[in-house]
Image 1 (cartoon, rainbow over the protein chains, first blue to last red):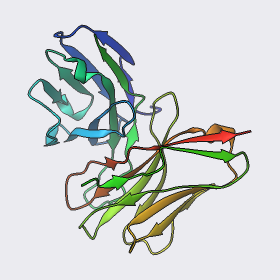
Image 2: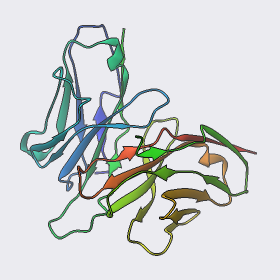
Image 3: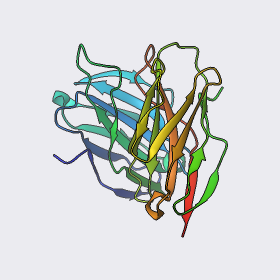
Image 4: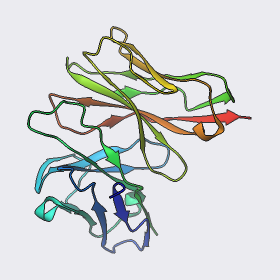
Length: 118
Length: 115
């Protein structure tokens, strides 16, 4: 396992279509995060999972967005009825948090999925 | 209010010289962490260095060091002996340990190393 992987790397879709992205975290990591990065901006937090539980969602995550992490392994992010404003890079990150661990919890990022909505 | 502010959209540095990338942050938490990430044109965020709010010494990782001034709420990244491969976007980020576990990122600084 060499790191966080994301598929696809690029996705072009027409407005109104649904898209789904996949993230495979580092295998022993129990936390998984989704971020969105638009041009000229830093990544913005969308949601995060600890194991299979979705513990936090930002206001950016409208009802057209849904994320899952079945069995606490890989995660999927689905966007329904895509809009041009959804065009962005979607980044996934993972980290390991132990019950008695430090607060460092470095997040390792994947290469991202670049979404273009026409 | 922005939690992380990076005021330098772009910076240039001569190869082998040192450069400082500025970062200020805003939090009312006493316990937090500050991170710097590098993002080359390939898009992947690469972790560089971490500073905890209770760490008394400035963090160092190879050619990277973090100039942490807690009273001023600044966490500047210093890159020594710049290399051509250092050309990339650099993001400062913060995690508040009493809140959600996400990172708050600044808008980044594009560093260009000139041969």
